[in-house]
Amino acid sequence: MRHALSGGPGKRNGALTREEGRDLKRAEAELGFCGLYVIGPRSGWPITFGVAKQASDAWHAIKRGHWDLHQIHAFAWTPGKPAAERVKRAMAERLADKRQFENPEWYDVTAAEAIDCMEKIARSARVELFDEVERQRRLERQTRAGTERKIAAFEHPRRQLPPPIPRLVKG
Image (cartoon, rainbow, N blue to C red):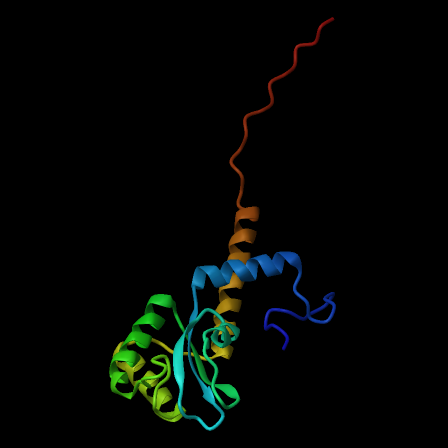
């Protein structure tokens, strides 16, 4: 998948330039997005959920195997890690009686129930959940704002420097 900020004239295969990559990383750090995920077997039961900085990090969260192939049933972005952790803790409290005894990271609920629970908790906690498209829009806005700041700093009229001191000529 090509990044939303890439592409355009002079770019090979939609790759970012080194400076654009740095700007993108800076924008991601400034915005501090964090994701909430619901993972489980394809059947949708049982599930586990958690917090990850990237969707790929969610796979590393599954430490113990399961007899079926897994899939990410939901991945939603939040404005930051504190908000994501708050929703995750509230989900764990609400679903505490549904924990599986042999593996407390897994819950005896369907993916649809877990996703519904996540959305309700986020709404009641006033935590905004958004998808990858919205995340890309926000990154693009932040990167554009950073570029505009750089241009403004470059074009800013410099204060007038005093005239150079004349050199003494030996002669």
